[in-house]
Image 1 (tube, rainbow, N blue to C red):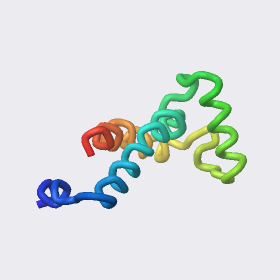
Image 2: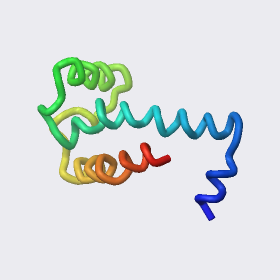
Image 3: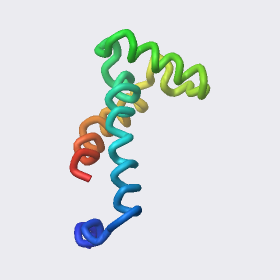
Length: 87
């Protein structure tokens, strides 16, 4: 099963998984969540998102966000984010 496989991960592989999931927590909270909850974040987070969009030319993360995209972000916030803590 998946759970027994995850428990069997050791050494560098385990740390790689930990780093992957841990790095997604602040990215989801600070960047992605702004598409679901516009205006909720402090100014420095909004500035970071603007910088990110400029540097990486990410047109999806620029406001206004279409309904289909916001739906995906809500899924990320309410399903993936709790899993990042569990993983």
